Length: 101
Image 1 (cartoon, rainbow, N blue to C red):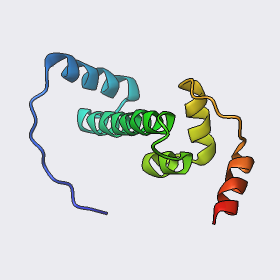
Image 2: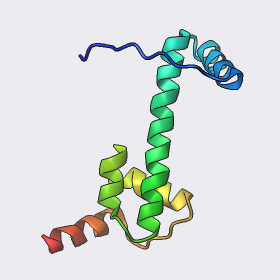
Image 3: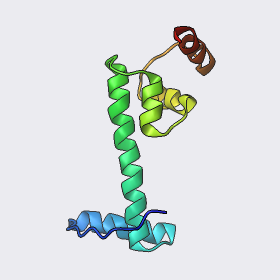
């Protein structure tokens, strides 16, 4: 396990309220709530970024999966939710990748 480091940060009142509400709802302390919100936010940021790159034809579904830590199936589901159309199943996509190798 890596050693935790201190990071001092000033937060606006609305962000502090968000952290406090999350801590209350999840029955955890504010530090843990802030950590969870940061991780969730980072994952969503990466997902949005890489799905946009995929939509523009600048990266593959595999790259989206690798960058976000999601499975190929999860990425395909997220792409569909984002309105990105693809006609392949996970199996068909993987078969196509195998043919390229």
